[in-house]
Length: 226
Ligand SMILES: *Cc1c(COP(=O)(O)O)cnc(C)c1O
Image 1: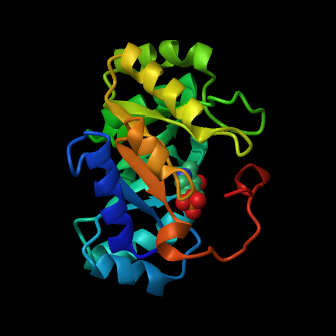
Image 2 (image 1 turned 135 degrees about the vertical axis):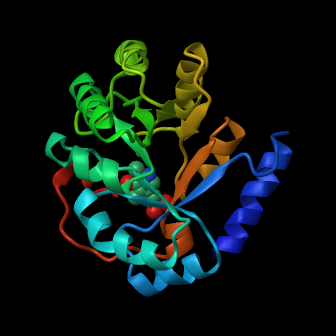
Image 3 (image 1 turned 120 degrees about the horizontal axis):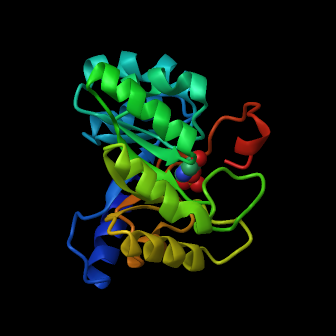
């Protein structure tokens, strides 16, 4: 599908679900895509892009941002403590907050620099061992702690287990967010974004459906399936 076709599809589902048109942010996931494909989408004026790894994003985006200064870059992959400062410099939104030590570090650096990206807490809704994210039972506590530090928490993010019905996980995430008064819901990828929008996604993260298959490179084991 082209970017145009996906945007049309997103609008159509918003309408069907009686949601406001344009209330879903479409993040074009540009990880492991060749520059020419990314530039083709940039040239269409698209503003939101997602990356999985801090190092790859640092190689790519400062250069591209020079020509497309209005873009917003979203970090979708796990964030190691030693990369927090770099990540906070580059990314406009971080979707993978998953532990208290991380929010403490972010708060300290934000204090230092006077700047903090918007944050989503990643919830491991399937309680899968190999997946990052806080488990549902510990989500309320991490939300409270993040707010207590005065950080700009927007919402929750999840990646459903491959073998289960995504809608169940989207529903659980929506419930956790609502219970905590959070509006943002980062959920839905190429294969399941329609269901996610029906359940209230504010951010869908779409890679292959926009750009085509990614180039194969060796990734750390916890990222291989993406
Ligand atoms: C890679 C990735 C996506 C995009 O996946 P597609 O199936 O290519 O749409 C979305 N979210 C996260 C967290 C990812 O790592």
